[in-house]
Image (tube, rainbow, N blue to C red; front, top):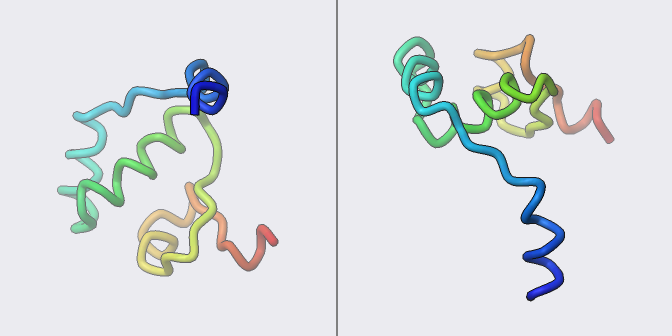
Length: 69
């Protein structure tokens, strides 16, 4: 556990709460779902997801799991 914690320590990100709430309000997705989109946007990567609703609402920020594999 100690080794895992040390590896993860430098790879943690803070989520922009304002962005999460704005995305949730604009999309009708949960704040939980929008945390993943906000994180992906913030670090400029696509979110790989099997959630079709998230992919439909945020196509520019997502990549279907089937396409990723």
